[in-house]
Image (cartoon, rainbow, N blue to C red; front, side):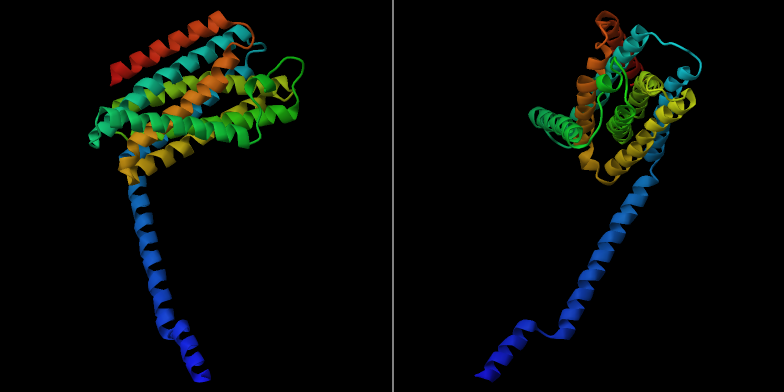
Length: 302
């Protein structure tokens, strides 16, 4: 009886040599798959579109720095001017979402063989996922909204730095949109998208720098921090272009996801801030002007 039990246990344990060989085969397979994935990633990083996306992200980061530059020169910047520029940036982003992300996403889904309803469903789902992802990030990560950081009646240092972190966080979907945009076939449309996002980053950099100055910090530090807040864009642009390069079928989803994220940022942050100080007419006119300019850029270059 004991002999049978020992044989049963030995059978369950299996041959140690075979077990070792199986583990080695599994490890070798995992290494091969990892090497293939790394190779695909390196191939994606060497694609011209990835280099163009990185350039677009760097230009957007420079635009943020350019927007912050006036704090080094001007003593006072009127609230009406800031709100008009914010409205302008909101209009640019809305048009960029519509003409450079949503419509190309529908075309990309159609190119994959989906019909009109299927393509619309993919884009709708991607938009919803992008907006929900930004909503979850907004709820989970500690940060300060624009109206809280730049509100009247004093500005605490902690709230200002949380606000700066929020701006840097919101630059991620913009950079992602640039990278994904360059992953599509239309280079001219991607260029228009990157140009529009760079235009929108100018007032954003100004708002960040002004909030830091209002908290009592030096103008040089305000400029440096505002410029640094835009560095998330080239990193996200590089990641977005590389991802689409490896997984080409993700293009319609990625375009729509970036569009949903940008829509959330515009509706949740930029438009409310542009109208917070009561300059609604100026902000609204700026929005219309920004939308029209971005539409002209997209149609003229596309």
